[in-house]
Length: 468
Image 1 (cartoon, helix red, strand yellow):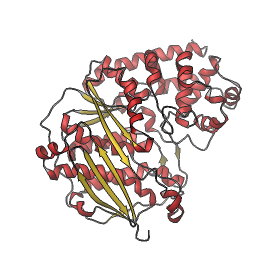
Image 2: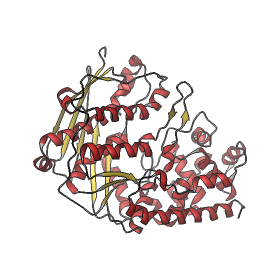
Image 3: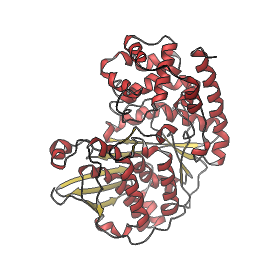
Image 4: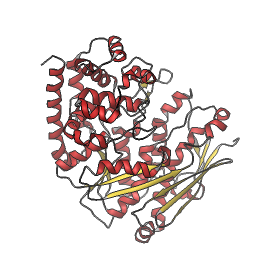
C-alpha cells in the first residue's frame, strides 16, 4: 500500500439498494445499504439523479471514513469530485478529528493529520431541496436498548406520533436476529410505521488488521456510525416526509473518557452522539441537503440517573431490551453489559433485572477491569457508550445500600472514597434544556416528565442511602 490513496470507486443504485465501493491501493471494500420500504428509483424520478447522487456521496464519505483507520495519505472522490464543497470537507474533517481521537490515542498517533483530499472544492456549499411529501410523525431511531424504550415512551406520553427506524449492520452479526430483537421492543410501543435499513459491509469484520495492521502501524479500527447512519437514512426521510430524525442520545455523550496529555485534547468515544455533533449534523443537513429535515436527541437534557427513573415506570418492557455490541442480546462480559447491569441493579426492582441477566456481573472475574475503569480506578473509562464515573459510583453505592453486593462488589466499593451524594445528585438530576435542542412542541410534552422523574429519583436515592 505504498501510495495509500483511499478512493471512492463507484456508487450504484437500484430500486431498493445503494452499492458503495471503495479502494485503498490494492485493497477493495464495499457497503450495500438496503431500503426495503423505499423506492429509490421513484425518488430519482421526483428529485433528479444529480441530487440523489449527492445524497449517496454523503452516505459513502461517512461510511468509507472507517478505512482512514488504515492511514491513507490521500482521499480521492474519483468520478464524484463535482460534489466536493468546502462545507462538506469541513464537516468530514471535523468528524474525523473528533471521532478518530480515540483511534489516534489507541494507536499512539497524536499528530496523525488524516488524508488530504485530491480534488478542490467546486463551491462553498450546495443548495438544499425541500420535499413534496409531509408526514405528521417524527422518525425515532430505535436500537432496542433502554434509551430507545425511554425515548419511545416519552414521545407516546407526550402525544407525539412517531414512526420507528431500525438499521441492522453485518458488523453486529445476523441482521435477522437484530431486527427480531428490535421488534420485541417495538411490540411494546405504538409506532405507526416500522422502517428498516440493512447494512452489509466487508471492512470492519475483515482480517485487514491481521494482514496489514503492522504494515501501516495500527492496532484498531474506528467508524463514524452515528453520522453515517444519519446520512444513510436521508432517502427514507425524503420518501416518507418525516420532519425530524429523533435520536436517543443522553447528556453523558458530551463528556469524554480522558484528556490526552500528549495533545491536550479530550478523547470521547461518544462524540458522534454529543450535542456538538448533533448540532453540526442538523445544521448541515438543513443547509446543504434537505431543508425541512431536522435532527435532535430527545434524551439530551438528562443523564442516566433520570433515564433509569423513567425506566422504573417501564419494567414490564425491560425484558424486551438489549444493548450489547459484542453478542446480542447480552454477552455479559463487556463494559456495555456491565454498566447497564450495574445501573439496572441499582435503580430498578430486583426481580426483572435478575430475569434479564441471570447472574451477578460484579462477581465475574472477566468483568473486573470493566468495573474498575467504570468507577474511575483505571487510566480512563471504558471506550463504550456508557455513563460517567460518578454515575457508576452512585450505582455501586446504591447496590451496597440495598444489600445487593457480593464479595467482589464489596471489595470494589471499599477501594473508593465515600460518595458525596448531594453534589452528584445536583449534577446528574438536572434537566438541562439549555444544552439540548428539543423542538418547542416536543419540549412541552417531555420536559415536565423528565423533571418529575428527577424529583422522584432524588427522593428514592436519598431514602435508600439513608439521607432522607
